[in-house]
Length: 241
Image (cartoon, rainbow, N blue to C red; front, side, top):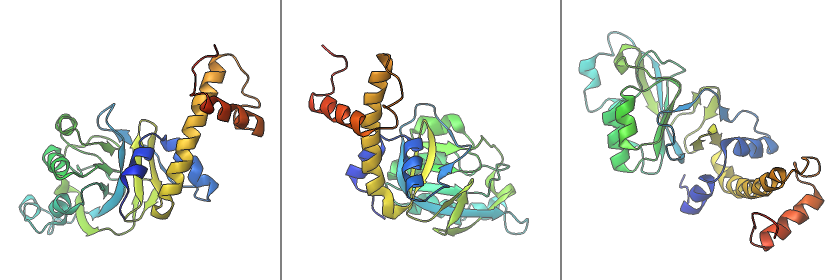
């Protein structure tokens, strides 16, 4: 799918937890990927359609460093074929015994305009990945070379990322709150809703800091919604004059 710049900008202002709540309202219970950690604290949000690469356990006659270096290997091809603006999803089945990517691959992704990378395993060369500026999430750091334990088998098939199903084109949102997977057909309406939720929560924070009770304020009531709309109409003043 193509993710519009407008929707991407909206998602950048939305919390992963709020997005998961919006999806829960629509019947999607399992969208928040547990255990994901940013490679670089403070990195920009990870936002983009999923381009998946699925791994299975390696086999000794097929997976060696010599074979890995061939240009027809799916792992290296993924680095060159993941579309600009997409998120490379490296699905290992939760296996962090070997690295899913290192700093040279991350740099190539960054230079090609890929939005970021995520794995339910681990990356190597974390300091180098941080230096590239590529947003990336992993379960834990992992140094051993990929062919020791992992064999890439296919692009853009449905995969499990941690505990969550990811289909090609689903939108990945990763930020300081965590990682959530958004079905492609819902991304625009979820982004709109969550941006409104974020704005209302700014109003709630203002009121709570002034000593107000959470009752009748959060979740929103018809009365608090009117207060919020008046606050927005006044230009969202931080304090009453």
